[in-house]
Length: 140
Figure 1 (cartoon, rainbow, N blue to C red):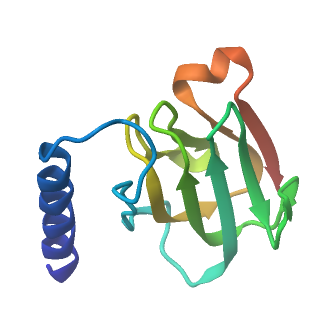
Figure 2 (figure 1 turned 30 degrees about the vertical axis):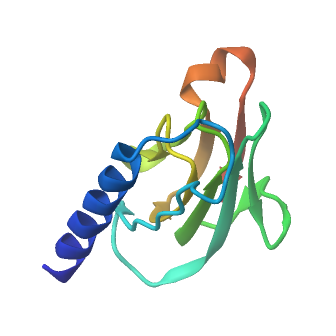
């Protein structure tokens, strides 16, 4: 119940801030929001993954500072930094993983918990995936 209350408070604050207006350029008014969701089965986190999208047409997932190419199956905390309001970060893979971590026009950071099963996962910016703004990693 406390998580729901916090989520409602964060959403209310975000709406209030966006209703104040302002220009669309980068400034100290850019939002940083942290939200937690869980995809898949519950369990102790087996590691951390870092996702990044923007500010140009780049998207990536890293583990321990290195490009994630092969990851052990398990539950991970995925922290996504979205540096552009024209991109989103979407993770798709086996076991029903279909997690849109950030959405257009969000700009900031969000954290989710994902349980990754064996298979190939795709991370992409939905508006620009057909232009090649996507990548994959293998879970073993």
